[in-house]
Image (cartoon, rainbow, N blue to C red; front, side, top):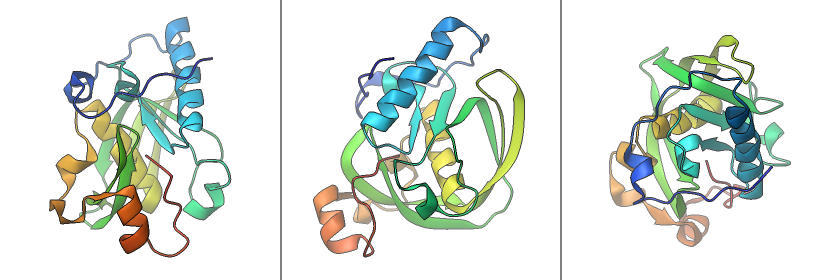
Length: 185
């Protein structure tokens, strides 16, 4: 396994819609999944999409940073949630605005509106179809990662740039007490 280089905002791969994966079992796809997991863990991310590691493929994943899984609430995956060729549908019109960060926009935070409940259809690592409902924080993280597959980054979804903050200022002025500020999506 290898730690991959993270594409930062400005790189064209982040603004190119990702291609569907045709052969999930291909060795290069399985290796990419392993490398992305190692990369996400190295950078203490809780989500990562293939375009963020310079691969324009419809692959994203979610996993709680070490020691944080129980803090994310009910429904948080106990093991890595691998989503291949995902399709996301809002289950409700209800949206909440909350803070997000991104490995591709290091040291920035902003408030982003997201649907509070979504239906997810995707393939798992073995290529088997999976369908589930995600709520609250898990729904937010999945929407964030799926956006990368559509060439969208969190600042594109912000209603206003007034809350866009560097991490140090977020920690000092905005973060609720006890919020881990190093965590990225």
